[in-house]
Length: 412
Image (cartoon, rainbow, N blue to C red; front, top):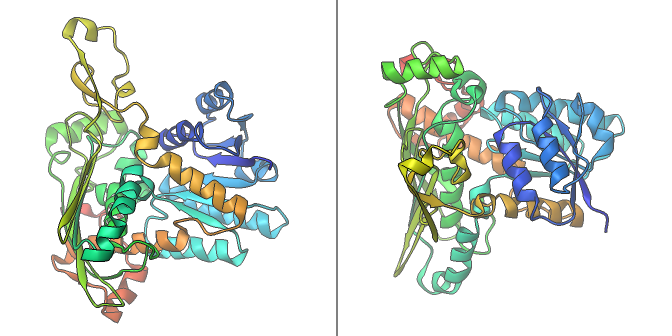
């Protein structure tokens, strides 16, 4: 069977991470790359790793006739326009086998629903990329515990964390272009993996019905004068005028529609984790059993003394968003695989090739955006958001968080 020809839109950090993952995925050929700035380094990586021709195109529509699948890894504020361009080409006769979108699907619920409406109007198969749901540790835990859950019952509480010291690119720090702060950027991960881990094995990812969301958002580190100045100098972002949250925590209550049982997913995310690097952690508690996962527990450690550290120029070779280049370093030998990027790409390839649904599609992505918006609304109201209330649900459809509007000073 011929390999699926991938075209990637976006030339930043996440595209590079997915290319590293694609080295381990069969039946894929990366034939096209599009970015606002020509992605020369990505093209070189593709060619050096025999992933495909890695041809650079000036525009998305120029690339479409040469690919089977388009992966949208571009910044959040560009995604709706990219989808509109792709759908217009499909209506004009371009044939595609699938469309991928990296998390979050959109900045708000109105954008997310518009994107789903567009792809469904041309019956274009789609996959939503939420890597943590695909992590081998999460999948192995569910498989191992399946008979225990059948005998004892589902987990009743999950607690998930994602933390690092802050994003790489300026647009991530801009609440208008990104869609918010750390809740938009990383809260979507924790919402998804918590919901998924609470879900009974064999049930779809949206089986449990969200009932309530409560959240607290704060600007703790990057709102202080010293760090505001660093953001302004490094990224041109003014957190005095248009701040975003660097910490978010909260709880989602879900209901099993068959039994009526309530379960809860707690989440905490931050952009001020000045330790080893990226930390993904999750624990889950069930009757007589538990899950405990932490990506900073590595089977490999390195020690680099001060004298040797002078030779280092890239501390991130050890771990994503590493905060140190010497001392005792936790090292993950294959981060894309550890974090689930390899498996989410493999799932999408198999789905598009075999004409079956992926584990997660854009409709699922819409639900994650809805929960994210409910978290922002809860923080603004300083109250629990009731997702069983029709008027509240209707308000969420057009809701734009104050932080996303650039009015974060009113709530932070």
